Amino acid sequence: MTTAHELTAIARAELFLSLAEKCTPEQRTEFEAFLEAAIVFSRAALHRLKSEFESHPSWKVWFTQLNGNPSVKFFREHRNFLLKEASPKVGQSIFFNPVSIAAQLYYFEDPSITATATVRNHLQSYAKTLQEGEACFRK
Picture 1: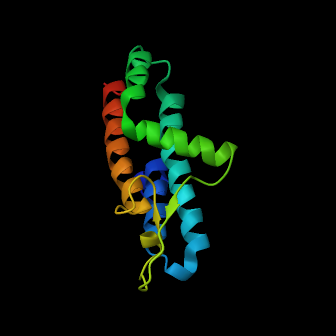
Picture 2: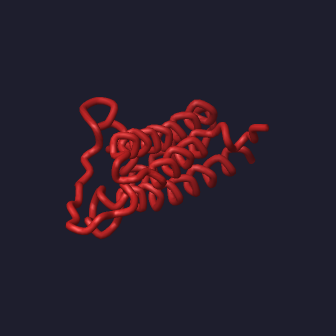
């Protein structure tokens, strides 16, 4: 049985991110696709919230303050680049010793932090921001 949360864009992003985290180095194509899907669904969560609450009197003020949120910026920029230009700009690491998961091979900002860790950190912050907004609009 599917719960209401499982149908949300955030839950889909979490699902695809979890699938990416399980990929082996031989599954780099799958890893990249799952990571891209996590980014797209993350951004979709805000679009869905906008569809539901844009007419709320507090929407414009709340939405405007999102411009300073690093996680909102991360998903907006990477999703836009992904859908309009090419795959996300991720760095790739080369190791002389074997790695056990594909995530160890990719990074966004810092080679010591995997791309999946970066997305997960942003996703947690982003989800919290959207939940707080939704709670405000449902009052």
